[in-house]
Length: 64
Image 1 (cartoon, rainbow, N blue to C red):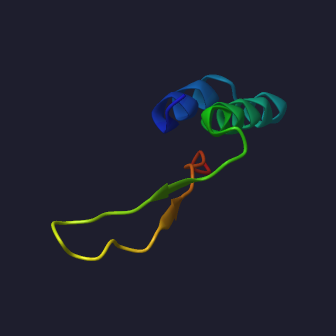
Image 2 (tube, rainbow, N blue to C red):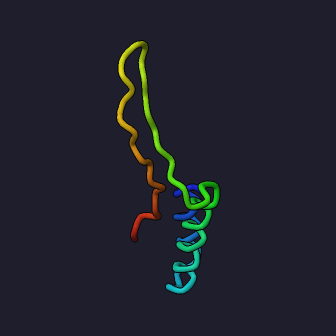
């Protein structure tokens, strides 16, 4: 689920318990492929030393 899909789904359901469920669904969908691991990025150009590893964190739904 993308952030835009989560926002669209959340706007369709105004009740707080529905919104909480959508937030949990969004968090579960973004973490599903990682299986509790983290995604790290490193870049290298030509013969230069590689950059430090940067941990990428999943986005969360913006607050209303």
